Length: 467
Image (cartoon, rainbow, N blue to C red; front, side, top):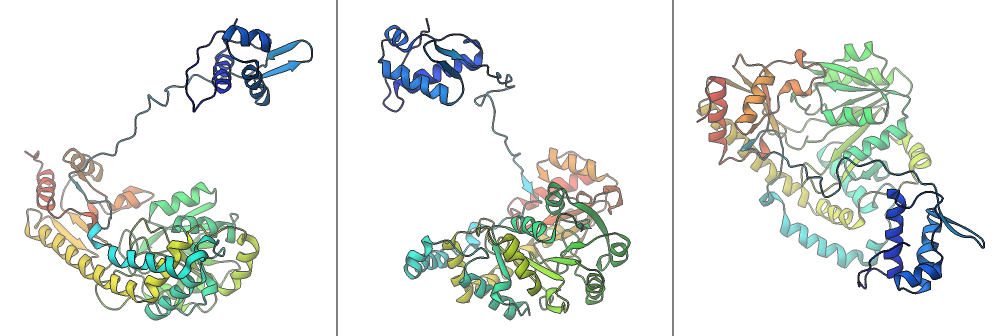
């Protein structure tokens, strides 16, 4: 006879405890397939529980297919595939710990002191008072009208783009929007990406199973010659400030790419403008979208870089002729950003707070960039480091004078607690990359630790171990 023990726990009923015990015995094989179970009355008497407790447990097991009943004969164990023995239980699995770095040259981050907490909190309260019950309603598939209008005004004033709010689609991060574009333009098309380039873009395209071409760069950005040699339909570029090389694409190359797009049916350019706001010399570079006359450019940008990574609000601007196709094929999707955040950001933009915030951030980042470069150029690396592409964005390049391979340099730096990103990391064929070039993402660097970090790096280049 089956024997189980029960615990007095108001949160778990007796029938559920019995159900769990029997289910575990069936899955483990202790109760074999075809084995007849005790009658409800017999089991209730043996376990000293009510008949209704056994009845409920049996009915739950039957509902889930673990046992079956035959009228006037009783209950029997069903044939169940036993689960494979797990390599480790949930309790055995240890959380993967990220390595602790003394100094991280890779990760861009925004200091908490940079976030406009007071202003943002005030606008959140204002949003609750003004929007009231409207916050409980779903926003349109393309985002709240107030936010789309505010973005359209911002783009017209600061990026020279004349767009209607209806052309703007709001999404939770650019990764989400990339996936939406793949559905809109079609997975049967051939997509081209910059090589070197931002690796996450390539991973997203690969994960969607689309045909992918990598196009090399020259001194003016993505090579129009190489692009014409490939069978690409859509090309993904960052012309205002390429990551990681920092190249700003001149108007002549932009015009070449626009001609390429206009020469083929269904060709498009995805313009990723992710950190164009942080340009420290001269005026912002006009967008490719603003000079496109044939509606072949789709513009993408995000607020994650300029406000905070946790503000997962990005947007894309579609050419007018794609709007009907988007509504018809993808309009059933719900907007992935909460209405509360959308209305708060709309106020942040329309009240001029975003412009003020950007100006403060540009000043702070310029000062931090200058301080990082000053420490490099005045320290032990002065004669062994060349700074490049420092006029825009949140990173610059640093070429090191060393015979060490990139791999050896990275490994020895890791041993000293230094996390490095090398330009070769962003090439599909690392051997084609200029060697010994670091991609320095300076916004996340701890200035207090930087002198010691540079000292450790200098000792590596000298072939000496850090003491």
